[in-house]
View 1 (cartoon, one colour):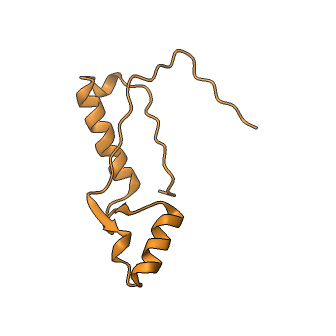
View 2 (tube, rainbow, N blue to C red):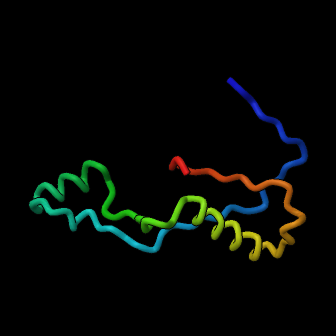
Length: 89
């Protein structure tokens, strides 16, 4: 197991960005009973989907821009930003 230690690091804020398009699982082309079973099994009624040209890194960039603005930071004063994702971008 690998460990990483970065001294003198403080988390000052967290920001997130999701795609604006919402896909409803109830719109799947299957009968209503199967849709109900699907939704109750996975626990997800709707999901956000990015268009074909938006990458996870694009969403991360928007979230970082918003956070930097809200914290009133100068970009050149930031030593490190941490990017966490579930996608292979």
